[in-house]
Length: 373
Image 1 (tube, rainbow, N blue to C red):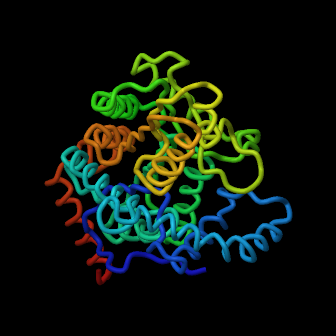
Image 2 (cartoon, rainbow, N blue to C red):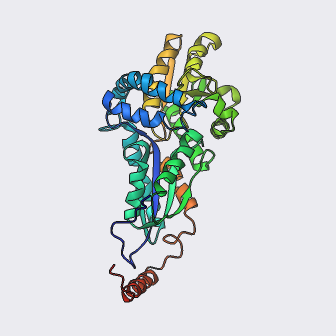
Image 3 (cartoon, one colour):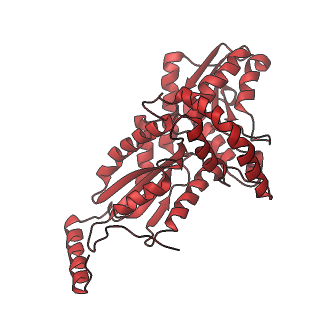
């Protein structure tokens, strides 16, 4: 196996801390042609679809049926949201703005160099390309922050898999820190509560606040995944911050895939039942597990589930946007980064003059030993 190094390494050059922000990803375009490789990469990830013992059977179903039918349908859905946050995919545009806001807040806390990069688990820009970007900039310490507040094997662990797969090809592996979750971070909880207060100040309070999270199969929970628990912790803390009792909010799970049982209650079934079975006609929905608005929030919640609710007698449906690049959200994410980079060379106790002198010594010694670079 070939292990690659940096293309332009020089003895005595300055080092840096790298901050890698990641999210799920998006296809390159809202077309069937672009969706097919994106969905293939996504659905072939064993963290996303934990296959039966006969893995060949899942590959047969995926390549023979799903990838020949689902891309066209998904492309139609993406087309409806594609330019909702500027030119291109909303998730990518928002995450780019989040990165800029984070960098603005974090950079002043570093005396030495700090570099930032964005990588998507599926699609472009990839996690591998983002890591290589940081590598080429001399980052010898890298913090990875996946923008998944609640840990799940299908998201957070899959991100670590992708980071590890890339680093396994490097000759010079950096010091690595990885943010596992932030489902109860005070700044994140307050930002969610603030966004709800602001929405309700304009639209009034509903009969029920629904907190909808992306679902996972029930067997993942049964096998020890903590995601379900962390979603409920976040919801309880937000409710406490807002002063809500247990009857004033509900936790549901969306984005079901396949025929097996997923964690419940389902968001779509809830929207259909609220008006007919409980007489609740006024709801507001927020998606705390999504750090940025995307297909699953804009189209699935804001359009599809709104229709379910109204078709079954609901009268008022409000969708509260994700935290996106709100200032309080950026503050919380920057605080996370500062917590996890404590003690690193470029941040604390960095002496620019001493660093320059040491680098000059290293370069001179390398030259005396006959090294040309």
